[in-house]
Amino acid sequence: MRHVSAQQKGSHRGLIVLLGLMSALGPMTVDMYLPALPQITHDFATSEAAVQTTLTGSLLGMAAGQLVLSPITDALGRRWPLIAGLGIHVVFSVLSALAPGIGTLIIFRALQGAGSAAAPAIAVAIIRDISTGREASIRYSAIMFVSMVAPIVAPLIGSGLLLWTDWHGIFLVQAAMSMALAVTALFALPETQPHRQSIRQAKLATGLKIVTADRVFVGSALSQAAMMAASFCYISGLSFVAQDWYGVSEQSYGLILTGGAVVMLFMNRLGPLLIRRFSSHRVALIGLAGALTSSCLMMIAAPTVGLAGVAAFSWLCIGFQQLVTPNNRTMGLARHPSNAGIAAALMGASALSAAAISSPLMGLMGVDNGFMMALGMFSFYGLSLIASTVIIGFRHEHVE
Image (cartoon, rainbow, N blue to C red; front, side, top):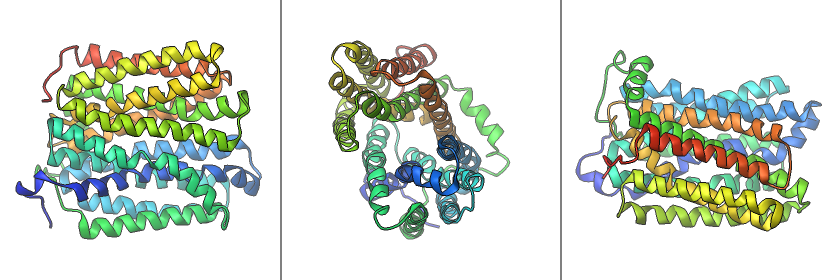
């Protein structure tokens, strides 16, 4: 078994890139097939709502998969459970391509999501294994920098694939991607878990009791869940606001998404600079203050400025989130080296569950000029701020 020595913990650029690519598997699983949803609806002669259930199923599968895999990683190490999860993703990606009906596709998508859950959850735990404090925050930002490109390029890749194949081919390409990651992990991923436990000690209930007794973890996880919910207000709401309300073309909508991506990447690089001067908690609070202010300004701009104001302030919202997410992870996992797998999985599962809930809520709120999307984001940012200040506290400085 390969292990990481103390001397190896100083520099892990190649490992960080690999972990970033693995973290991108989840967004690629969710977003790559989105351009094919109308095609799937037609082929199965079903409703759009039924096909959209395959998206919700994949998110819930990811949440459940993280909770199932977490005690295994704390007991047996990170490497083999990660490879096993990628293998599960390969199998159910192929089965999704062969699904005979919408019911079986929903099931296979949920199980495919469960397999993809191994990559982001274990990647976060590995960062905790090899670093703490500010160094961990910088590395979380690094894997986010690599993985955040996935939701942007995934629909473009899916659209390109549909030029020469159909939705079946998209799932086969997803299978090939996870197979390539599994092979790479087999030869290039070291074992990083130094705090092995027995299977009995690593039971989910035991680990949950330990991590949920820590108010810093609870506050960080709730803050993170609200952040993810706000993100999916943006993801699920902006397309309807831009295309249905303001009538922009698909190409123009793509440019709007590109603008948001540029802001996200810039703010992602700003985070490591701030973390060298301030604590993780303080940087997270700076990000939350910026996101709340931007979403408030978006509510004002929607009925006055229109799409330009909505787009610009939504970019700032998701940009400021880049200061919050990596620092929430740092604070939440800092005190749990022996249960980093469970802690990372619980944080990820709660975030994915919040995302699965927020998307339908945006649908119930209806399509307008962007005010309701801004209101939804503002509300979730407010919940995130409450979690960071009331549960964690105003002066939490344990992460240096």
